[in-house]
Length: 296
Ligand code: GDP
Image (tube, rainbow, N blue to C red; front, side, top):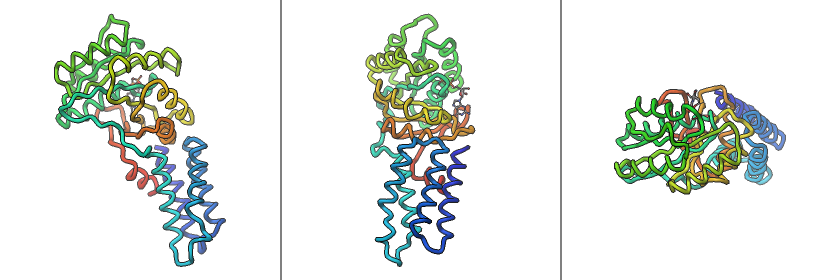
């Protein structure tokens, strides 16, 4: 995982700074430049990285720090805080409550791992005693319903979809209504993805969202999309009220930095990460432990 490499590069930069006899402007700049390079290489958006560097320099004013101050610790803390800030939009996402019906709509491009992630999300909650259900409102991709059906059957999760109905809004509404009647507490609506961001896709997302009134819209993003992450996430956010992000394929060779950019673009937190193709390769995402691990 390239995020581990990012962590390695940042730790090395911090270590080099720690090894310096005196921490002066040059040592600090070298360290920050090293970290900047590592973040850019990991596809974190340029503006985010530049802001981070400016903020750290503002916080760590070497002239003001008396000799007795532990400059290393102050710098390390500032870097930790700034990385957390990129990943933490400052407000938690809507959290469904067990026993109370919530509708959660998944959006994202085709191939991002959306359908797989819908099942993982359902399965995760089912293991904790919830009553989830899956609705396949992807009428665009041939085979989408079969895939969801297969996954749902394997996990013993009720599902709804159609081989003949071509209106995604209708299926979404029917599915949500049926599972509300069945007292499911987590109704998950999988939507169409298409290959690229296009007006028709966003219009469809808007209509499905308007008709089903989801309590939460989750944007699913493949961790390998790199610098395109910011724009892609922002485009979805402009059509539907994205409230949380799930980043998939964190097990692969992706650079992962796009995840940080998606948080900034949607002002929504990453709530889970996908770490493999299997149903249980799914982890809750917490900012502070993640950044701690990143910094070694
Ligand atoms: P969708 O088109 O967005 O619904 O994407 P799919 O759910 O069909 O996933 C596309 C491919 O990515 C499939 O081969 C999945 O098995 C794979 N996939 C999804 N999530 C992960 C993940 O976290 N790690 C890995 N390695 N593969 C994943």
